[in-house]
Length: 276
Image (cartoon, rainbow, N blue to C red; front, side, top):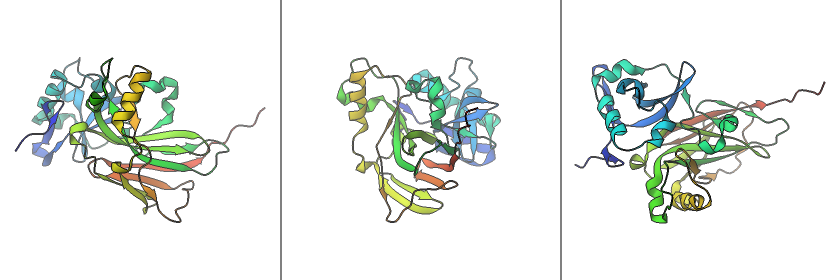
């Protein structure tokens, strides 16, 4: 049987043998470690700190930095370290996941617009009915300066779940819970959307209006692309009949096999302070 690869390297397998956790294909996350964004890998119900288990001071400690260096010795070092028993010393079952990637084009001042798994979504003051658009997002690494269309798909590092939120105007996008590397992604995977536990919509990437290849190629012609940029698939899934817009307090879940479940709660409107 052939071994799956990530950019030409065998997949990273995480084995916490003495804890009885079965080895799994790598699923990369960003988690909060004492207020800092840290690169982690999912191992059963635990998270392994990747930079910690590798143990080299130059190894990327964030997913943004890893995506900027996705080939060669970096992944080789991670594979070797995560496959060893020392991974257990760098694992934790108590963690808070953050948005896996912060797109560089947004800039520091706009990163509040990106929401992570299990975060509440505060709505702008005076906003109307909440509309959300379930999708899949592709995360890229830096393409060649003269990108050819046939090369665009090779720029994709991995995929994650994504939901656009609007209420008269766009106000947030949620990402997560993790990034599945490109070789592990199944384009035929089915997505399900649930609101308060009830099926709201379902669909697959086959129904997307445009391809990631076209979107990346078109964007690269307009401006230089950076590693960590996110491209969304467009709205996936047909809304069920009589499905009402989610109200404050509603829990919205987007899930797909192998990609986890992205859960967010619709919060109350943000009230503006009266002028003094």
